[in-house]
Every structure is written in C-alpha cells, then in structure tokens.
Amino acid sequence: MTNEVTIPLLPCPSIDDIVAFYSVLGFHTTYKQRKPNPAVGLQREDLNLQFFEIPGFDPAQSYGSCIVLTSDTGQLYRAFAAGMRAAYGKVLVSGTPRMTRPRARKNADGLSGFSVIDPGGNWIRVFQNTPASPAPASTGRLGKAMANAVVQADSRGDARQAARILDSALARPEPDDDPVAVVEVLVYRAEVAMALDDPATAAEMLARVDRVALSADDATRAAAAYEAAADLEAALS
Image 1 (spheres, rainbow, N blue to C red):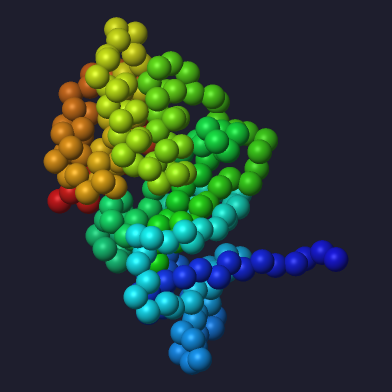
Image 2 (cartoon, rainbow, N blue to C red; image 1 turned 30 degrees about the horizontal axis):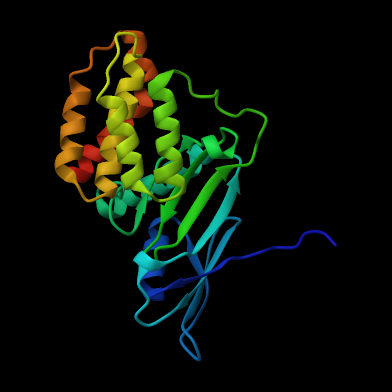
C-alpha cells in the first residue's frame, strides 16, 4: 500500500501551552480532548503533530523528538521566525521553547537543518529533503570547528560541548583565518551562550563581531551571520 501517513504523538505538561506556542508558528487545532486524557492535534499545511498531557512532566527531561522533511528549510524557518517576532518581539533562542537557525549538518550529509524545542521539551527536527545540493563540506580549522559544534549543540543538544569546541578554536587565532568564518563562529558562540543562559558571554561575542574588519565582499558573504546576530541582540535587549 502507499500514501500512509505517520503523525508523531509527543508528551507535554500542558496542552494549552502547546496550543499557544504552535499557534504562533502558524498551526491550527484539528482535535482536542480533555477526557479521559488531555490530548491535542495540530496542523500547519502538511505538517501534523499530536500531543498528550502528563501532569508534572518535566520538559527538561523529555526525550520527545521527531523529524520533519521539507523542500526549503529556510522558508519554513523564516515563517516560524516571523511568527515569533510578531508574538514575542524576538526569535526565541534561549530557554524552552526556543529555535535554532538553519545550518548545514555534518551528520546529515551536509544538508540544512534547524530545530524547534517546544514547551514540552520536544525537539522538532527540520531537515532539507532534497539531497541533490548539500552544502559544501566545511574547510579550514574554523569551518571544521563550527561543523563539529553544530553537531553537538543543534543535533545532540549538548551546548556545553559545543561551547568548548568553539572556545578552543577562538583561543588560537591564525593569520590566514577567513574573517567571515571568524564572524560565523563568534555569532554561533553567542547563540550557544544564550542556550546556556549566559547572556554576558553572548554579549561579549557579539561585541567581538563588531570588531572584525570585513571587505565589502566579505560583508556580503557574512550576511546570514549578521542576521543571526541581530536576532541575538534583540533577544538580549
């Protein structure tokens, strides 16, 4: 048979909090019940998620996760980010809920991916489903450090290990370091600091970004990193 559909069923401490958060991302409720067990179904276009409520459930201890495949991770990220900015005045980058940015994943054949960590602590992992054009493999010591840190923080959720990788790379500057790579690593280190509830380090890293000298061509290549920096600045304010 064909055309089967699988819908993940994920835990949460409150279906009301889940509905409120996912409505910001453009989801609508397709089903909701209070008895015998609180549960809710949500949908955004072809993306379906369902949740069940567990009294006293701790999102920090959640192992809930699912994979979402899409033809354009950037487009979906921008839609989610726009919803967050409209509702919260910023993109959520720390605490729970939060969202990571689309980045090439070394552990996913270089395809772009980002994650939404919802109020239940569930990781909704969004990946590009078109393997024809993966991102080029990271080169240079900073590019490799960045790729390894992304695996730790954005895939495994181990922000502390990602911070160690990035700090080690930043502590050993070399004359031939690509200034754009320096900016990208600093911005990502700031994002990791926010995930670790360390706004002082995040502010320090963003201040260092402002001191990196870039040519006009470099600034164009670093546009995505500067966009991420602006979101982090908003989150810090």
